Image (cartoon, rainbow, N blue to C red; front, side, top):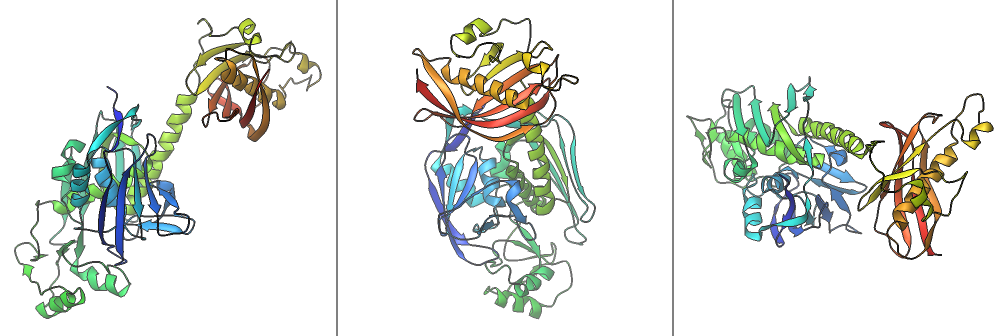
Length: 462
């Protein structure tokens, strides 16, 4: 069953303080087109730079997930991203006027409520998933963190946390389906140990903390006088410890394992930085932002491998081609010995696949490394260009020609020799405008890329 991509039905805004910076922040979440993904726009900076929700942009994970590009950075993005993923969205543009996403109540609850009010709509494009097909493991010996992805038909998570604490030792949380995110995970707040608070303050952090947006845990003896002093530092009324739980009495736990559920929330937010929705079971032991984002980078590598494999053309020599060489001649002006495409086997909305069989009888082999025949690289480029020309011209009713006016990023990866069957996959990289077509060309022998390049062609009426 295919799923459609989704975006917001209408925009909404939220405001609040950044947890660590204490700055006042305004955010507006806007609908975005298909294949846009989640992106942040820093509207307070010159040029309103865009920061993609991408693991490759992560620059810090010490007290939250921070992304940066050029002079723009944005911190504590994980709760907002978890809410967007948990509410089944794919494409959203978030405009923000400061350097940190507001902490709000320390959970994803207020983001989720705002998304519900705004509404979610389907878009006219299929959702693309990263399907976990084999075990993927990340381990950090220093922290003891371990994250494993296993094949599964849905996205679900098992999270275990462990602290050297008499109050918060081992906790476990499970989410079997994102359908339960809103009620079972979104309301779960971040947590902090009392012993960390003064250190954080002294290090210029938690300026926006007010003891009401975090579960504060006290697992070591501390005097009421010291608690009062900490409360004063946060401009908060004096508080006591709930003796039976070891947490401060300013709030009640929503779940017995709320801390583990919040860590699960963080994992969802951080793994969204892989860039695709996941089909698989995630098992995370002692997760943290560093481990989560490093695992997201591993998932991005899997996505790249999958994209490369998906792009490899399949050639069945027994199947009737879409165009034989005689039909190709009706579109291209090239003739022997310079017609370098034998057949066209596939044409889709944005790409074409062509074939050339390389034989020792090619005239260029007589003078180009005759003792060790190698097909000239320039002819591989020409063959890809001809295939791209066929893509541009195949549906034209009148006579046109294509002239390639620019070639960039050419790479030759492997020799092409007699007996090789070349498969050309030429993909349109942007819509054709004003008679200019931009294309990416890949040349394969089997599953191996032997040459590639970027092409710009001008389309001229003959």
